[in-house]
Length: 198
Image (cartoon, rainbow, N blue to C red; front, side, top):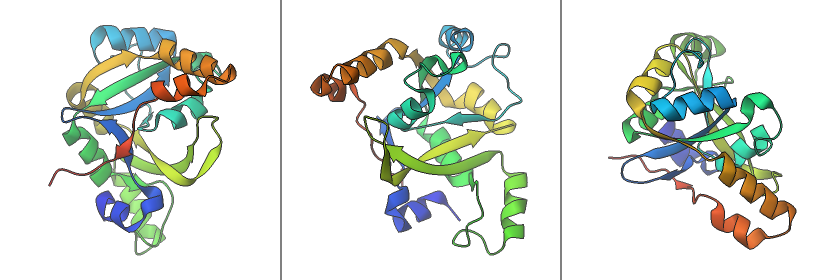
């Protein structure tokens, strides 16, 4: 079952992202070493990036902030990257991904779902979206896990630009701490429901 069918059916699991006609933006957090290499090369290269581990991309800026603690929680997530990818790549992630937990609305049986997870290199996970204080919201946001051939496609075909946004992230965090919410909100990316090209 294609993910865009489920997005139409399930608005609380709507795919949202910052995107233009040319790209869709996802976020990742890495160590400074990996981040500097990625920015310098315009993609992830091994080493220091591992091509053999599953890598997760997140279209939600605030969910990335929740996961990384505004880049302050873990040295391995100290640098926040905005990764712009092609619409084709993003749509392949959505249509070829398999949900991370068995859902009878998606699969006839647990066995069918298990077989799908074993053959797909793309995992779909829905987590509670976050507000600017990183509190849980009532609706969900998508995370997409890539492994094996999907990681290779991501690095070699889908990525069009990588920007280190750590300084901007820290500025937003500082504004929130200081109670300057107007500035904080003005610096947030505007994420909109993602509509598939017909």
